[in-house]
Length: 310
Ligand SMILES: N[C@@H](CCOP(=O)(O)O)C(=O)O
Image 1 (cartoon, rainbow, N blue to C red):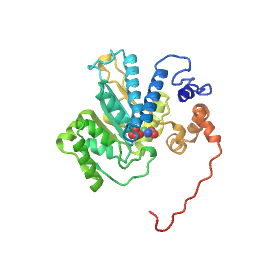
Image 2 (tube, rainbow, N blue to C red):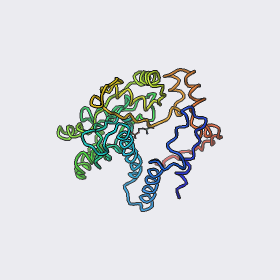
Image 3 (cartoon, rainbow, N blue to C red):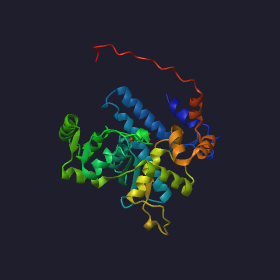
Image 4 (cartoon, helix red, strand yellow):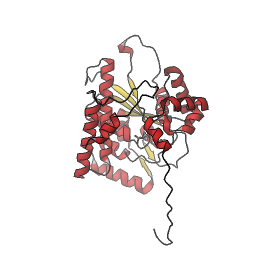
């Protein structure tokens, strides 16, 4: 029953110029395997019991990932796990708010996460609701970080649920207003409550490309466009690359990488140039994704709309 875990752990990274860094090895009993097993079985149980609101179980993964990230950071920074005086902030590439919600759930469970910061592109409804309390639908615009082009993030409902102390009646009222008018403006009280836990920044394509180049030059790390949105957002919010002389001066922040450059040939080429893309593809392209590239594409199916059918 745990074949997906074995599949995940068996990935061969020998050709990967990252130096063979995988999530964890098949035989290693580090946190990776039990963690994946836990997520997998919890998902299976929830799925088979069919006792959850549609697709809520998908949030189990983002939730557990945030707990894992916190524990890894605490370990690296020498923080006592659970120490409320050493909060860790997170900047998250944000589209449908799934990862943001996972982070919020972890925080609700008591994980000492400080600010949850959403990095969004110019499709910025998440930024507008966090900064101004305006959850107003706007027409989508094309960007280079296109899988986070979201008009209305469906997970906002879940964030609002926790922000209001699980006030089902109020959330139903809000979502009804949203459905009817495509606009929901939060009252001052609720907006202020939201701002206690969240912050955000809106990032243009130019800023995203600039962040990608900067991180490449500074850290020798090649991010995907979504992660680069979060990196640019982090800089806008005020997290900077600076040398610190003591732990007290540190402002620990995690920037989540949620995608892979392998999905973004065109965008990576725009940001870094053709040579850089070719070099990345040669040395870092994930092996399994490579196999997908070589697989024959399935012919499209065509559907005809019958007149009068809805
Ligand atoms: N899944 C995205 C990341 C952001 O999505 P969200 O639903 O967690 O806001 C990606 O492909 O990078």
